[in-house]
Amino acid sequence: MKLTLIDRSSYFKGLLLLIKRDNLISENEKNIMVKIGKTLGFDKTFIEYAIKELMENEFLTDDVPTFSNKFIAESFILDGLKVAFSDNEFTAEELEHLSKIAKQNGIDKEWLMLLISKYIKHSQDLNTNDFLFVTKYLKDEKSETVDIKS
Image 1 (spheres, rainbow, N blue to C red):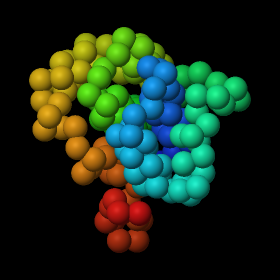
Image 2 (image 1 turned 180 degrees about the vertical axis):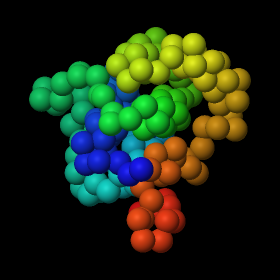
Image 3 (image 1 turned 135 degrees about the vertical axis):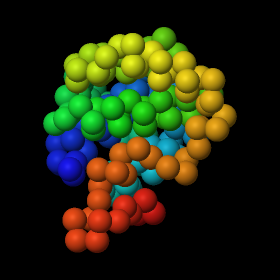
Image 4 (image 1 turned 180 degrees about the horizontal axis):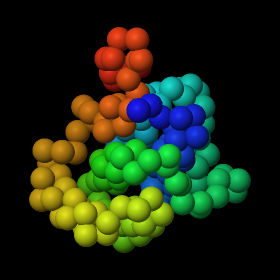
């Protein structure tokens, strides 16, 4: 299963909206968003502009993304937690955003809360920029390898 262009766009936009929730974009959030954007195949100039203009962008709607399948939505939640915790804070607004996305995509709220509690407990170990969950949906169909350095 591969991500569609719509899934890639929704993934990136959903994470942009997540980092916007606390009205402050940290350097760690910028760094992980650049990595995610590049991993999803977006141009670095576009990514940096989207992050820079995020707080003032009146055209970026708060629509809750719907993904083409539940597994991609679960991957989004996992990467969303990495992004949310990258500034060492997890706000009520970030929780609300992830909860809405989970509900919209048929993800059980109990699973989400269990995941969050485990993430809080192990955030020091999990809060690295070394891996992203979305990469498993970006396999090169020819080689079946995952490119995480692009």
